[in-house]
Length: 340
Ligand code: PBG
Image (cartoon, rainbow, N blue to C red; front, side, top):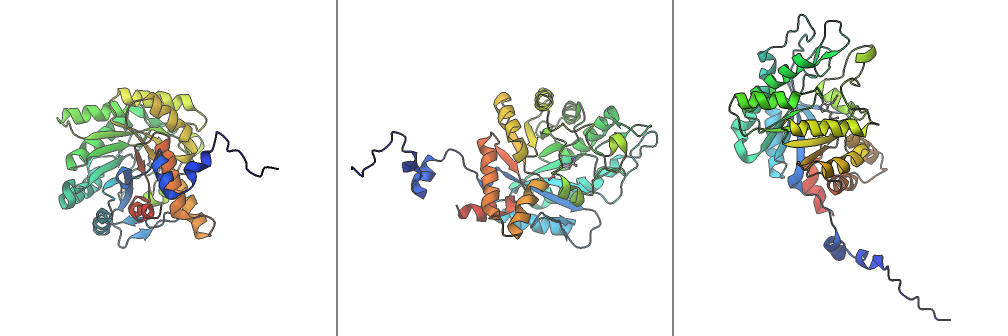
């Protein structure tokens, strides 16, 4: 009997046999350049604090934040998403809503300090939302009955915050609240200041997800409420609703967003793929705290190779249409990529 097996016309394994040919045939790869590092800066914090599940990420004070950024720049992590957490929480319910311009001063001061020190060596985007600022932890202002987030007053508050952050030096403002019409209102507020340069990155397809857990500890932003307001289901997108995500993204594009985002990442890859094919804007994806922490906690238990697993997830994002990735591991990427 002839022991030779006739080669099949589909000899796919020939192109998998060594790292050289795998590199030559690989279609999608991640680079440090496309990663954005989130930062938490907390007013009045004495020492920086670790965040459960988010290895290597801290709640910082102004001083430790600047130090951290300095060391991040050395490893190419030069794109930032800043989450400012003020000490005072404002009453944010009609009729005595107490939000005022000074509510955003802590954030503006951090932006100005970062830009003063590092200028254009970095690109600074800033989260625009009320959840770290309000006493009830919701992303907006409550109506008088306390059973609904008032859209109009929330949007004008967000536009005011965004314009202030832009003036303080932010390169990009990123509203994560999911109110209707906020992109248009922010664009209008920027236009009114003759600001032609500040980008708006919209959390366009932000789902009502359980994967935001560690973040809410870090940003001190968990919603406190009852019934319809026990969570964020009345403003974030239902996980089973693709059409709502599409409508939200189309609307935000029309209102003038420069960059659109899908959030979370891995559980919503199908959304990222469809939307990025449908809408010709650059797409960002947010590998959220719960996703990041899942890998980290498994790695701690010896169940998974952490860095390689993160890189695998990032590659999936790029393959699915993301041109940029917000990830807590951005500052580790340079080192991790050497291992491939
Ligand atoms: C707040 C906001 C959230 C995240 C970013 N901005 C959480 C939320 O909606 O409660 C989540 C980020 C993460 O989990 O890493 N509007």
